[in-house]
Image (cartoon, rainbow, N blue to C red):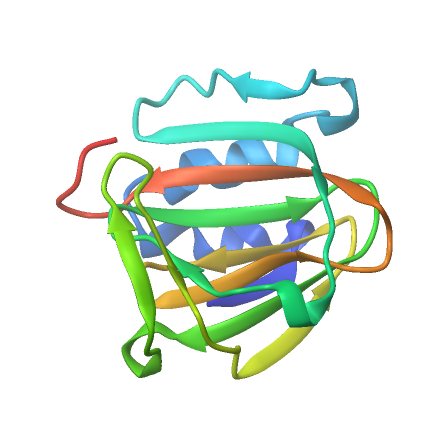
Amino acid sequence: MITDTIANAGRYALLHPDFADAVRLLQTLDFAALPDGRIETGNPNIRLFIGREPMRAREAAKPEAHLKHIDIQVPLSGAEAYGWADRSRLENGLGYDEKRDIEFFDCGCETWFELHPGEFALFFPDDAHAPLVGSAATIRKAVFKIRAAGHRL
């Protein structure tokens, strides 16, 4: 997992073949002017979704993890807290949904942190995460889904 400011995102461009494109989009898109929904990225290995999501309390947030993609999550309208746990240490998996590339776990997270507009979190497949935690009713956010090595979206 990586957390940083959008201004520093270029530091991570060499970690994955598609990160340079993701960083370019992260640093140049006017997210406030974009509509909610799926946004065309010009790269078939990067999907971008923007939308408003309901927030929840920390106690209601269950970790989720993916096998086929890497997430870059960007809060746009306010603060968002995230739980994190190393996937290998999680128990009580609730079953992998291959179509959605997601598995939820019925357990807590090891670490908690908060992001603000202008910051991002990058979650690799080994990073279970519990997003959408906060006191606001909803949050508008951007989520990049980047194909993990050896997988197709």
